Image 1 (cartoon, rainbow, N blue to C red):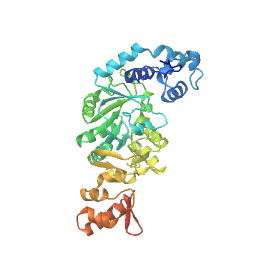
Image 2 (image 1 turned 90 degrees about the horizontal axis):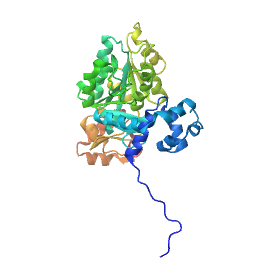
Image 3 (image 1 turned 180 degrees about the horizontal axis):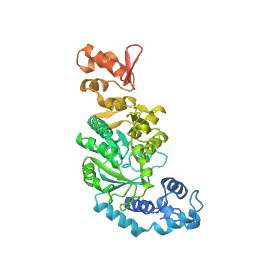
Length: 382
């Protein structure tokens, strides 16, 4: 028997638990932000490679100084990570690592996505159809009413409402979605063992039943001022667009609008009284090009095609948010039109209803910019 001189290297199966533990270890390192983490990952190839590097090796990476390099070596301990995982599991929290199947695709496309997100509740594919609704903590009664009305309308057509669990507009956005029986996601600045503000504990529990609480912060992270602007990029990153309602010129909600612009998300603003301090930030945004909205139809009609189709139900795939407001007949006719050119006569035969109703419905769909007529009696879906 001839012995192999160069045997095949042993293939080591990836250990998901080991990889998750390594990511948690790095997530516990103070001062390690998502952009620097990405630079380290590109340099060392894996979370394990980062953790095995020496202080001098770590400092060879851009943005990594002596303090952070030492912190990576001393703070990212395995015992601390195991304790963190145990706390998360006891609290019913799931962890989602960037670039894995369970991580929200839209969030992964922003310039600085969180390395790791903690979720309490459920994340579903249909949450890709989401709108952020944010505004002032010190809102007027008008602001509360309009936020609740809009959130309910968004929820009823199947849009997930995303906000930040703060007092004022954020709370009304979550409540409106819940009252309408829809889904909502609260992006928290604190860890999920610390609900902030504390009076929203009951609201947070309701959110987990109809969506989820989400954060990039470790489980026991307490409130810190810098964490709130940082979490705003997650609100906009998860959303197709962001609506601002009653944001003054110094409102933290304007950070969310800026993140949305940088992330190529739509920015909407609801107008308020021109002499109200609480509406000046929104009015400024409208003056500078944000889309003025009054209701859910304004929001959906301004949104273009999705980056990728979203399976909302086993039988319904959404390509454009405007499809969510269609009647049953409109939706049926639309589903008979493909992205390739389809003969109008073929659509009429397949619809099995009067030709006049099919043609009038196609006209409505064309006005809503969901289909386009082609020469020769053909039609195509956008």
